[in-house]
Image 1 (cartoon, rainbow, N blue to C red):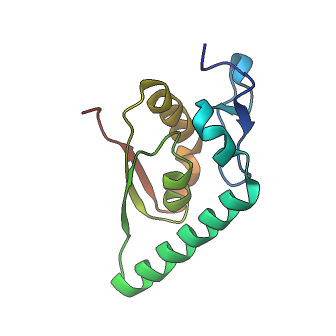
Image 2 (cartoon, one colour; image 1 turned 90 degrees about the vertical axis):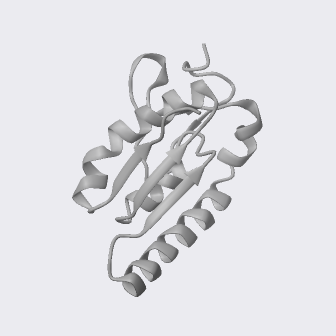
Length: 126
């Protein structure tokens, strides 16, 4: 039921594609306590810009692909932002519904991540 549109569904930010299937067309179903964070477009944009800048700086400094651990990744938006900037991202999430949505977000963004030289992996549950 969580994977369907609900009062706690929100649109994906413009830089990450959301899966489009069934009642989940281009929306990201989220847990209630994530709702306020996910609907704050300004907050999401600030985080995305900071992640992009950090990945660019570290990549230039290290002269290689940056490695990122996104612990408690939720649906994977912040980790995907780093991967879309060319980082090697390892994500982990304990909540099964969030892990499933993260897998789907990763799948629909896989080509763009690969085209930009990034890598995104979801670690197995602990």
